[in-house]
Image (cartoon, rainbow, N blue to C red; front, side, top):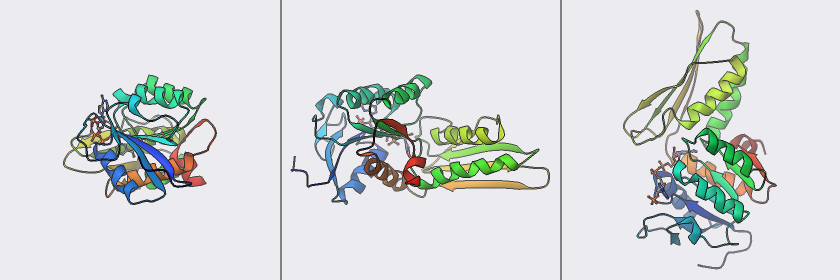
Length: 238
Ligand SMILES: NC(=O)c1ccc[n+]([C@@H]2O[C@H](COP(=O)([O-])OP(=O)(O)OC[C@H]3O[C@@H](n4cnc5c(N)ncnc54)[C@H](OP(=O)(O)O)[C@@H]3O)[C@@H](O)[C@H]2O)c1
């Protein structure tokens, strides 16, 4: 492993062989302010920097931020490693159970944690816009999401996150509608439907890189923060 340059952000990527993991690794490789200290993948032949097959293989005391884009079944191990090693965590994993979300909240009492079902700046801004819907009287609301056919969770974590924000503004709304097909990176649409007018807010991810860029921005932001549970809204506000 090469010696870190002063001030470089030392990251480990969990799920490095996945669609998102690959995107993060390729973006990080172009940025000299980042050092990929380790990549976790069960694929020993993965062409990535410093591959280890398990979290237990990560070097201790050498990682500033763990970035996790694996799957929910890996979350417990990731949380335990970050807690034991007092290392900040940025997780974009979706499809978490209520118990896993609680685990992230508890972890935030010990280390800095940022969990976001969508790391794009656009969705963070879109979520804030939903507060404006509280002025709409007599409207029906519906969230609709479309993703590639390989996406495992349904509705998407982003749709559920937007629904929380929408319901905080307008009260209970129906469950999001989910469409799966092709290679769509992610489209989220929020309908406000009145008798005489409609509003639709739509966010489309044009590539996967937008999420990777957000995750790396979050990782830079979280280094040196006190323990707490943070969101992309915290990142874009500062
Ligand atoms: N927050 C966001 O902005 C955002 C954006 C897009 C996607 N996501 C979410 O990010 C996650 C990953 O998405 P993806 O499309 O990259 O998935 P993917 O291509 O299926 O990759 C999943 C990764 O998880 C690892 N993995 C799976 N099971 C494992 C296990 N039991 N132990 C260790 N590693 C395991 C795999 O690594 P190996 O098989 O090599 O071990 C693989 O690298 C999903 O939850 C997705 O919904 C979030």
